[in-house]
Image (cartoon, rainbow, N blue to C red):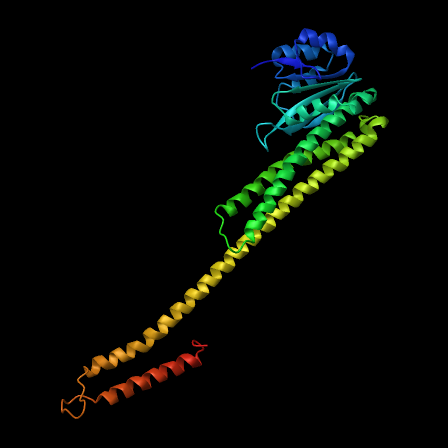
Length: 322
């Protein structure tokens, strides 16, 4: 475990150094702050309830205190496509403080954005604009993840409709994608709800100067939600297509097996009376008037032929030979 603060350039700071800089505004990132970080946040004047949320089981929410604003979001963990971790955000004037306990891709992206001239020119819009850039980084991270899943889905769809190759584990892969998209939706949809709630006029959270940016954010997260749902629907369709094709192939195989069994059954049914006739007469054939006392070969063949024709006619009338 380690505990430190970092400035916008990612340079590690002691909490004493961070305390000296905090009046300058900008962005301060606390990674695994620990007990020393708790005291630092309290000494900064942040509300004790908001500080306690950073060190306990939290939920996605926001709150406007008298001296500052507080937002809790979930962002994707760097170590996994779907695992999410909480990021706690304090806003006061032109100061943005983030508190986290995991490595998050959105923080790396936001650090790059913070150094851009565009962001520096808009710093006068306050910490609410910096929050918009951070939330946009979270949304972009989810977008990249969904693009990867969309490419993977297209590959699986091509495998589903490929008639020449049988791919192993195709159905488990489709089920796994459905599960991953369901988990992603559990994080993206709360993200959309909190963006919508932040924009409510009665919450007095978003300044008028930043409202346009948050409207853009709302549209982007809406698109994320639609994209996740569309990919999920595509995975469902591909899975259903695969199951339908499997059922059709099984039905065709059963039909061929039925035809083979029907043919063999007919042959066996025809041979049974012929075998019975041969057994009854004992095949003591009186050929060419040899005087053996048995029936002639022509009589036996005639009886067998009559029985065969009768059985074939019966099978035909029943439709078994059509």
